[in-house]
Each structure stands twice: as structure tokens, then as C-alpha cells.
Image 1: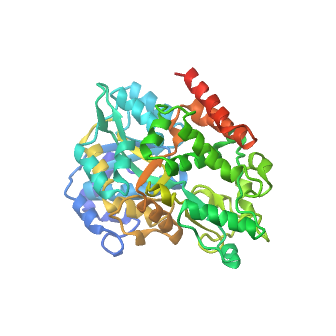
Image 2: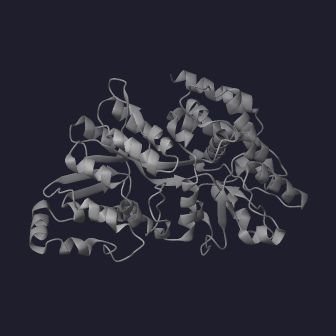
Image 3: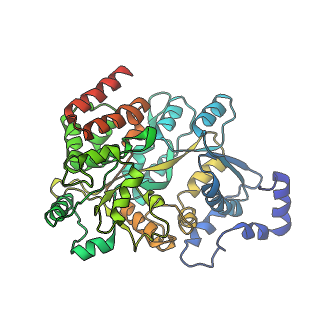
Length: 450
């Protein structure tokens, strides 16, 4: 537990920062991988006697990791920061905001909630210079500006949030030994990926393991496929219009993306166990086909978290690896990346809250977490050598190589769609229902909740 305000004041005054230095995970100035200049620059901000509260979803290990980052802000500025978080953030923030006792900063995993709070006048917009900074310093910078720009109470759009700690979904997992033994190379285009799939079949193998099962959430893995393929078949503006239902779900472009998923998932020769296995297999089990001997499949499309379901002892980078789910070379749409992230917003304005948001722009605010575990960033100014392992660094490279970043579309849609009709519709499609009929059903559901 952090000391009380009075105790902290005593510590600061008596020990002149020495006690604070003991709280820091990495001693300032010692490890040359870190941008210590950005930490030293932070000392120009004097926040002695000021207190900031931050609420978020991070608990357990992530809470401790985030607090290790907070410690540098406290040590440099003299501010006292209290982070509390865990499940139930959405309800907690709404209750606190309405009660007039919000945290200084909220860390929100769903941009839709931030957009709602901004519309109701419950968030403080960030300075226009922050948008300029994001465009210059984040890979696919305009994407991050767009994702955090919402309408205020008067309908005027402004940047209200800052994304920090990102997850990547646009990945294909494989076993390097299997590809090497068969003489296959990692493809760098969607055309090449489909050609590799066809070659695996020609050689008597099965290219893909796909499973849509996930208990009550069955179907969601297919939504990631469709979202990735929407971004690879259409410009990002079309993706945005689709997610906002400005482009209807039964638009030919959406139907084509679903059918592109079907070119993988509705081809018996492409999928381990055949088409019938797609809807019947749990996504956590489907990845196991990569590791059988001989391999039940060679490729698996899934997000950065899937190693959590690998067998104990599997070493990523050796026993398993991944590559970027590539774009179509012939469509000239750049390198889009699908993922998610946490959005920091100011729910109670104060000098400390504004200073902390500026702190998030500093390389050191990213590098401290990068050097430990479970952190990815699109910040172009950080030293990639601070990543804790090569797997994280490779995922970071995927982010840095993005021309466009888009948030998981189903997470941005109304719950009845993104966590309902879209999921079940993809299960129906995998079972044989036509894409146009599935898309029309989803659109009818969306129309019914307008």
C-alpha cells in the first residue's frame, strides 16, 4: 500500500528523493537502453502536494506492472498517484461520474464508453498538440487520433483519449520446424498466403486449423477473421462506415469479406477435420493441431494471447512462432493491423491529470513496462531493445509496420451485434448458410435496435 499523503510529504522532505529512487524498478541513468532523458525532462513539472487517482481494469500482475510505471511519474514530479482497478470498470466509472466523484483519469478498454462520456460532457478534451504528437510519433498515427476523437456535448469533435498498451490480432501462428521440414517460406502477401495453402494441400497436408468454439462467446474468432479481411479488401474508411452501420452489414463489400473468410473456413481441404470441425472445435483446442506429429495443420490465425493455450514448456520463437497476417499485394491498401488497446481519458481535470497524460507520451513511460512483460506500443520513439523478449519485439514490429490500425470491430458495435448476432451469424455461415443471408439477418437485428 502506498503511504498516506502526509507520510509521503515527510519522506520527500527528509530523504530528498532517495526513498523514491528505491521504489523504481530500474535505477535512472544506469541501463543505457532506456530514454532517461525523457525521465529527467519530467522533473521540470513540480506537482508536490497534488494527488491523482486513476481507475482501470488492470488487476493482479498488470496492476503491479502499471504501478511500476507510475512510480517514475511520482518520483520525478512529487505527485501522489493512486491506481485502483479491476472488473466492473464500466459500471464503476459511470456511477462515480454521476455521483460527482470521478477518478482523475479512467483507463477504458472500449472506445464506445469514452465516446458516450464525451458526448455527455464528462471528459476533458486533450490539447490539439496531442493529436499532432500522435500523428508524428505513433505508427499509423492518424488511426490513433481517429480512434480517440469523439463528439462533445455541442457536437464538436475533439481528441479525448490517449491509447497506451496495445494488443495485436493480425497474426498467423505456425511451428517453424514444420515449415522448414516441408520447404515452405513465410509469405509476405495474401496472394502468397493462399498460394502456400494450396501448396500444402498439393503436398498432401492441411493448411489451417480453425475453431470457433468459445462457450457462450462461440463465433467470435470468425469475427476477427472477417474484420481483418475487411481491412485487406477495402480502405479503412469503409471499415469505419461498416462498424458504425453507415455501411449496412449486407453491403456487397461486407458480404465479400465474409466470403473471403469462407475461402479458408468453408473448404474441406483447407481445414483440419473438414468444414464440420470449424464450428464444433473450441478455439483453444484448434491451435493444438500445429503441434501434432505429423501436423494436423500448419497455420492458425489468432491474436497475440494464444500462447497462453500452448502446452506447458512451448517456447515462442523456437517451438512456435508467428508472422503478420499479410495484405493483398494487388490491392495497394498498405499494411493494416487489427487489434485493441486501452484508452486513457481525463474524467476530472487537474494539473496532475494533464501532466500524467503528457507523461504517457514519453518513451520512458512505455519502456519501463516493455522491459518487464505483456506490453506492446506503436510509439516510434522508444528503444525496441527494451522489450523483455524477442516475441514482444516482433509483435511491436508488426505495430510499427502498420499503415492503418483499427480497433476490433465487434467490440465497437452494439452488444446485440458485436457480441450477439455477428457471433451467431458466423457460426451459421461456417455451417453452410450463405453469406448474403447471414449478413441480411445481422442487419435486420441492427435495424431493430436503432
